[in-house]
Length: 261
Image (cartoon, rainbow, N blue to C red; front, side):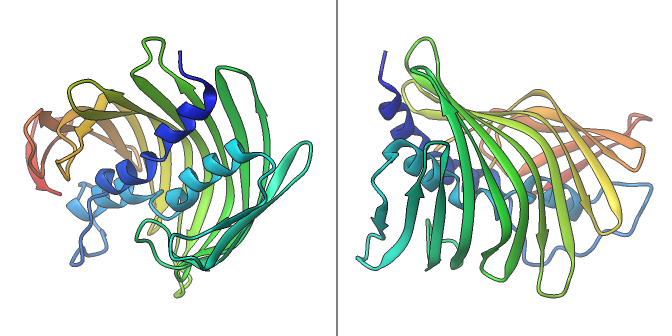
């Protein structure tokens, strides 16, 4: 079985998978219909932790280093650094760009525990910035390798809020497990349950069948989940493995609607 440090190398893929998992839209309008689910609302639920996950892979790398206090960006400019103690470390980001995200600026307090097979640590965000978005809250991570040696699981339990310059706030709490599998290609799946609050609405999500995708496709390709909006619960099905941007929403009365993500 690979040593823990090799597992951390695999977690560097997490940032890339997070980008694949996000369905972006420049023309999505605010949802105001209380008796239906809109494409914009589904996208909000899927994108809710995009900003919060921007530094996940770097935090995993810092955890692995555990004592190598200075890091630099690929361009040679100082980007981020860690100051270690017995119980964790403080991670400072100096207005740098990671994985094509907006500039990242601020300090995170991280505490951790680990053993030979897995690692766990909690990052506390206090007025931490990704671009103009202000993040507050906590994210707890657990990283482990699959028993067959060809997969890695990255579980995140979050309680986060993201505030825009205009004062709009999106919050998310819950747990997601991302599993990356290497088997004649690179595949990923997402399972869990989480709650998103945005635009005065509460959305509760629980996966039924793991949401799945693969590198080379920009969309989820399989899996299903329930989405409850203020008491209205629908089922969202992401397909049968075909790489497309379609999702099918089924209402309690059996009515179906196809969304383009």
